[in-house]
Image (cartoon, rainbow, N blue to C red; front, top):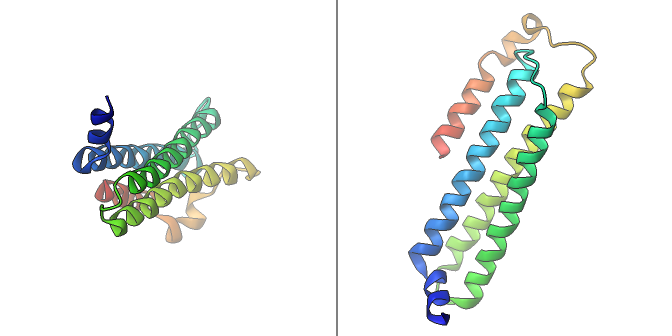
Length: 141
């Protein structure tokens, strides 16, 4: 059993698992972003949107904490691993978590609006911004 535990913490298996979970964080953040943009920009009413966004955000936060904790454990069990790679992983995982927070912040902005956004007034500033950001999500994954 101890041998199996050590094997889990070694190299490619550990990295593959962390990267897969990181990808899941990005996908969840993208789902949040798209749903909030539909509500904020397209004025599409979505029942249960707030609960959905907060639930996904909580999942992303838990994944972020879990991944960072496991990276620290991995470094302590395998001190010969590339520390700089682990630090980069910790940083990008935190960035993915922040993307979820930003989507949640957009939802909160939407709740504070007294009326729907007039797309005509702001079209010069924000036309296709949501699509450009979605493309960045796709490229990052």
